Length: 335
Image (cartoon, rainbow, N blue to C red; front, side, top):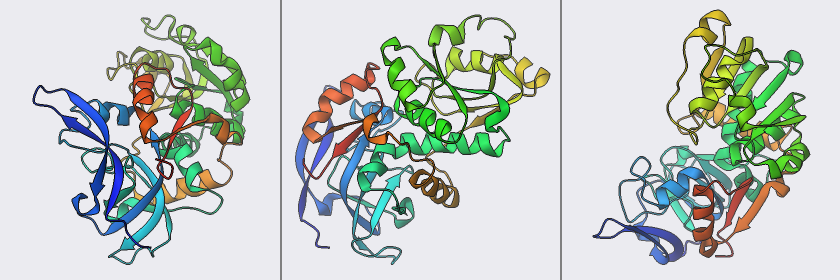
């Protein structure tokens, strides 16, 4: 596949006044970072981490100018290592993509070949980005619950922050796998959306956190997928049943965890961390295979809002203010 000499990308620049401005620019392939794999990006996505990078959050990106986008799906243009052939379709998530390495909000990326995973059969490039890091993280969470012995007949599984990207897909995957899912959200208007994804019940965020200051709460959940952190995660741990498992993969509420040891030493509750960035390749490939088959949400397309590069500015502000439901796919072919 022939490589264009220039391409469009959204570039974030830091001004002398230490402000961050975003604009779509024509970039040169020669300006991309070192790597043995060049991919023509067809689709990317918008994650909360991307919005932080786009607004100059130092915990995500420190070097500017920079192109965000922690997800990318497209076709291989060239691969010096021989791991892929021109025309192969690949998905790239995690590692340093979109953080300090120019990411998927550009029509081309150049990366180490080991960052890419071959697109599994049963999944299109667009579906790969409808899932993206959010779907991969949700699937990792379900995999860890499964491997911890949390079976579908164990009881209710709680998903917090359920209208977000990770939460929405976690609800859909768990329901498809036969679990009884309780979705927690602060957005009452989205109850029908969550039930359509497979939630058996929808509860308010306040109901989950009620009494969180207590040492322990009544046992409710056989397991949970938490994407909120903070007081919400503490309350979930305190209300998880004996021997239950909670996965932790987010901090939209807070990175702090105000909890005592009682859930762990009195009820044997397990708290499992989920990292989608440095996840080993064998697990990464296995998760994507499952997402292409039995774990692919039936209503995946209904969870997606699509935009092009020019439409990202509005979407960035919306996700930062908690206004996104489901997933945002960025179409680089139309940009």
